[in-house]
Length: 598
Image 1: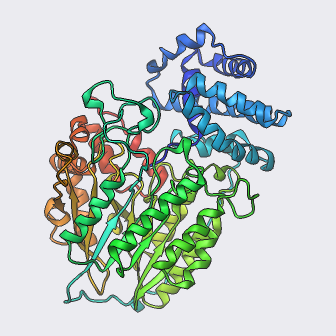
Image 2: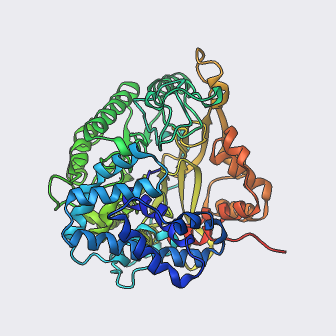
Image 3: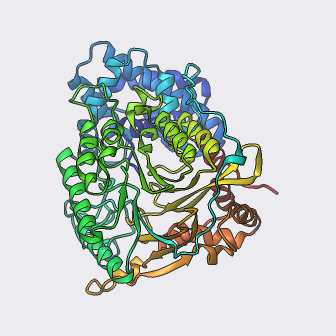
C-alpha cells in the first residue's frame, strides 16, 4: 500500500474540485487556467470554485468524469511545467506547491510541507532533465486508473523465445515425502513511533503516534497490539509474532518475505530512519529463524522518498541507489554471493534452492505509478523483465520449476499498464515452469488466476497474496503457511492464521489469541489445487454469492470493521472479476463494473 507522491495526490484533490466547479463542460479549461494562474500569486479561492466543491457528487457518469479528469490534468500539469521552465526557482516552486496543497488537500500543513520538502528535488529534476516531458505522458501514467491516455506513448516490448515442444517437457511426479513447509510473511509496516493510547483518529495520513495528541474519546485511543484506524504496527506486536511462530510451528523449510517494512508516515521519512527500521526487522528475522533459508524482496515503502526507484544514471542527490546497496549488504546473510550483482543493479535476484527448484525475486515496485521516476524512464526499468526472460529461458532448458516472489501482485490497477502486459506475456510463455507467484502490497488476502489467452476457461498459472501483518487499514494481522510438494513445487494447500484485534486489545497483558482462520482446500471445497480445480473454483465463485461473501470476509481476515462495511452484489462481481484480472487494463475494467439495473 502507498501514500501517493505529492504531485499525484495534489492533482487528485485539485482536479476533482475544478471539474465540479462549472455547470457547463466548455467552461472547464478557462476556469482551470485562471484559478491555477491565480494561485501563483494569491491564496484566495473564488466563490464559484468554493461552491463547485458541493457540486462534485453530481458528476455520476464515470466515463464523463474520467474524461473531464484527464482533460483537466493536462491543463494543470501544463501550468506546473510551464512555470518551472519560465524560470521559477526552487523556492518559488515550493511556495506554489504549498498553496496548492494547503488549498485543496486535506492532510493539513505538516503533511503538505513534509511531502513537498521530500519530493521537490525529484519533481524538479524530472521537469528539468526530461526535455520531452509532455502533459499527456504525466497524466497517462499518474492517472492510469482514470483511463488517461498518451497518444505518443512508446509501446515497448520484451522479446520472447519461441515455445519449446511440449513433448520434451519433463513433468515431475508428486512426491511421497512430506511437503515443504513455507512461511509467507508480508507488509509489516513497522512504526517506531506507535504509541498505545494516543489519538488513532488524527488529521494526518498516519495516526497512533504521540505527536497526534490525546484521543477525543475512548474509542479513538490507539490499541496496544495495533489499531483498525489509519495506523501501522508497534514493535512489540512484531516480536510477539516471532515468539508465536517459534512456539506454534516446529520448523519451516523456507520463508518468503514479500516486502514493505517501513511505515506509511511517508511525508516524514528520512533515509537514516528507513535504514534503521529495515536493519532492525532483518536482524529480528535472523535471530528468530536462524539457519532457515529466508528470501526477502523490496516493497514500495523501503526507499526514501516512498515509492521512488530512480534510474541508475541520475545524480546522487536524487538517486535511490542506496536502497540497493543496503539490500546487497543485509540480504547476504541469506543469499549466495552471485545474487549481489542484480541486487545492486535493481533490487532483484534468482536462487537455485535445490536441484530443479528456482526462486526468482522481482522488484516489481518499479511499475507502481506512484514511482515518479516512471515519468523520466518507463521502459523496462533496470532491464528487469529482459533479465526475467533470460532466467526463465535457462530454467526451462535445465528442467527447473520456479516460484516468483513479487511485492506488487499481477494485475495491480496501479502498476504501469505496459509493464503488466509484458509481464503477463512472459507468464503466458513460461507458464509450464512457473508453478506459483507469492505477493503482498494490497494488504488483502487475494487469489489471482492467469487464464490461457486462447481459451479463457483454462487456468494456466496462480498467484497467492498473503494479506499483511499491519492492520492498515481495518484489517486483522495475519501470516500464512503453505504445504509445497517437494518434487513439483506446487502449493498443495495453505493455512491462514490471524487474531481478532478487538479482543486482543481488550487485554494488553495477555498475548493475542492466534487461530487458523481457514485452510484453502477446506474453505473453498477443493479436491486439490490443480488448475482444473481452480478453474472449477472460479466458476463456482461466479455463481455462488455465499462463497464470494466468504472470500470478501477473508480478504480482511474477518476483522470487525472490514466485515461491517459489507459487500453488495456489485462489489462481489468486482471481486470475482479481479481474481482473473492479471493486467492493469483488466483490473480497470473490473472497477468500472456498474450496478445492475432491473
